[in-house]
Image (cartoon, rainbow, N blue to C red; front, side, top):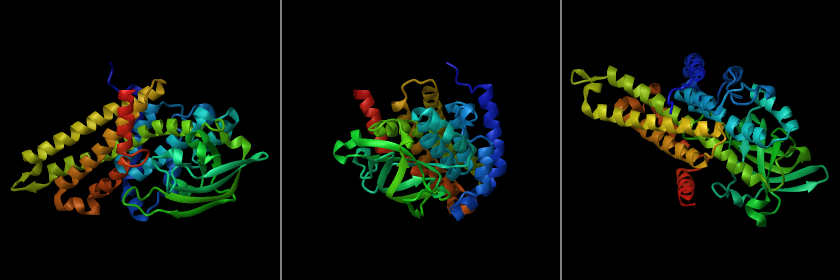
Length: 379
């Protein structure tokens, strides 16, 4: 077993770190305060290939692998979790299902623009009364000639404010539950799409979290993703992969907070000595680092499993569960190490603490991850 990153992955990691240090880190506080990622930063990330990391070159992607994608999200999230989740949701929840389930025409039509950042992707799955219960969707569609007509509402749509390319899930017959769900590729600037609001949030404030209404939205028949009734399968497989991205985001948040706490512990003096000499602080640092390194191992392994087309559903649930809870733990301890300064925005760990919590919730709560893991053990 080889636990070393390949030379290519090390070069990528170093390149992304340099980019983050120069382009992302200086903007992180402002992104949080403005509730917006600057368009110029999005453009620069796309130029770096971050929005199409593991898409094949023939579709405009960088032609890397899933581990490379996880490294990108991790490194960006060390400085700015909002920017990290833009990349994650765009890649895992939109590019990936089109790549995996789309026709050749759909791939050629949509993936190049997504890889280049000309369109930002968003997944329209969650509804006011259907979160973890995906089979309970109330959005509906009907076939009408060479189009599908969609009506309903969606909430908590990451990247929705960009009104780019969406993957929308709806049911042709609610009585069929999961068997009646289909997926569609939609243009969120189309007639019949109403952006209701961008939510104000505790954390990841620079990331758009949007609510939409759909009223007689007409979608061309060729925009059906997969086949009719395959939507639930597409959603579940998409979320399996998406959890790796969120775990990488959580890992990055934890690492960013740990790096700041470690540096602060060496600089801050109490009783005439750096607080890093206090055993209470040393034990905190030891626990934080151990959880981070454990998270990293399972995140990278899950990415490797997906890349090599091996079963990874349970592993993606485990890495998302553990890394997200690690992020919350580490950021809390980072604030404690900073003391009163940890509560001040200038020191950034308070933002990371706010950003960390959502990783335990979206793309499947920690409770849902435990359900997936336990079912895999008992099946």
